[in-house]
Image (spheres, rainbow, N blue to C red):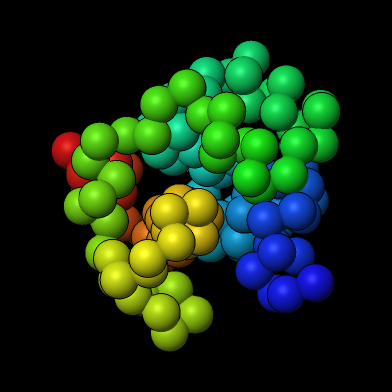
Length: 117
């Protein structure tokens, strides 16, 4: 199984606590991480909880997202040395967009800037 396929098949519920921990280590909150997820994916609190409870993989999590935010294309910068705006695989780009948003949160950026407001 390729690294990419391993990421796609990994349960989002395994990654979610890592995203929250990354933000909390820098003084941000789980609610702020959730807000970023809601903005990017269109899930609401109940929808996110359901996806986490069902332990869906990344492919399903993003595939069933109610609405990828049309401003997500404004997310730019590098995650793990890769520019998110140049990722050609749509699913990997969505995964990296969320990584980038949580990175920005952890770096103390204001929520209105993170949400491209």
